Image 1: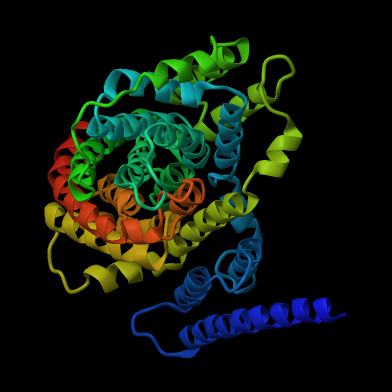
Image 2 (image 1 turned 30 degrees about the horizontal axis):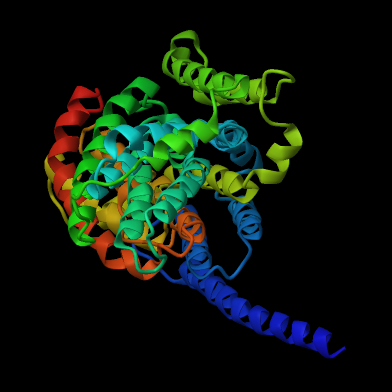
Amino acid sequence: MEEQNKILSLSESITKKQLIWFLVSVAVYVLIRILPIPGIEPMAQRALAILGWIIVVLLTNCLPVMLTNLIFAALIILTGVMPQVEFLQAFGTSPFFIVLALGAVGMGMTRTKFGPRLAYILIKYIGKTPRLLVLAIMIVGFIIVALIVNIPALLAICPVILAILKELGEKPGESNLGKALFLGLVWSGAGGGLAFISSSATAAAAAAAIEEASGGIAAVSYAQWAKFGVPIGLLMVIPAWIFLCAWFKIGNEKLDMSMIDDKLKSLGKMDAAEIRYILILVAMIAFFWVGSNFGINPPTVGLIFMAIMLLPKIGLITFDEVVNNTNWAMCFQMAFFMAFASGISKTGLGTWMANLFFGGLDTNNLFVLFLITILIAHVGNIIVPGAGAAVMLIPSIWAISQGAGYSFAFLPMVMFHTVNWTQLQPIQPQYLVVSANSGGYLNIKDFAVPNVIVTIIWTIIFIPAAWFIGGWAGLM
């Protein structure tokens, strides 16, 4: 009975804290609904109230994520921001299915030795010194995340780093090399997540949001995305590597990496499952690239290859594994954010927000708008970590772009890429996953300041790079 009372007491204390923040979120919603706001239409004000509510809930984690998603969807429908049929139609065109499918394909990596094998091969030929070892891990992180959604990819590489650090005699919590390797993995994963529409759930959501907000006018093809995302991602990795080595004082002495041969031998030769998985990945990327030429869009490609992964004798996973290991809350959140992005556009909230951000700026100079978009993206990512900021801000960025006479995807793409690689908000899934699987080598205090510095470095590089690459990719 005493133990039960302790449990109840703990439950009540947590519930009270959650309840307070939930009441704050409700108060924010009510205040935005009832206060007079100049220049905003009634339906747009309802959408703004919903936006205020979900920002508070996401920042405070006062509700379970799935419950937040369901209340969010209910508010959108019940307030009339989007009729039920229209909301469900927007859900159907959301990245829900491609996120689900890519996650399922990514699970296949856990059934093979592809990730560790690639890591050890690159480390063998590149990682001759501590600095080059960091570079090798970052190249692996970029490639793996570019091919597979980032969380499964990052999880595949963490054991490799731990094994190497143990062989080198590095101590958790004290090793600067360990900090640099794990942080480099996260940063390079951010770059890899930019490469293709299929490289991350956030990329799929952003591509869908740009198409929805623009009514298809500025839809970004898989090839266009790759032309912009791959070089931008690679340009982020190199300066990040140089900075990491300088910040953590990583040496350049020669390492005895003879144990890498032993690690590769322990993996054995590629078996049939690993070969099949590599072929499936290559074929999926090829289908993503050329599918639009035959009327096959990315969600359909994703579902086709998810089905292949489930096939007996050919696939590597079961449907039960997909059900049990899928982050359903994230899938629904991406879908609902996508549907809400449509509501932001159609209620006029996007235009109102665009006027709020840009109204005092009397210019249609694309370069000036480009710089302001980057600034807004940084601020938006701090308020709403991850893709949520980009997806919900894309309609506003599209409105200002079109209002200035630019009916192309450049500014929305800049918005997404900035939100995706800015590291000003460290409490994001990739950090939590890598830190939890770093064996104590990486903690939040290790990357709080470096994150700010690398974001400044990346922004300086991104400005000229995006300006010139955007034209080459046909985005402007």
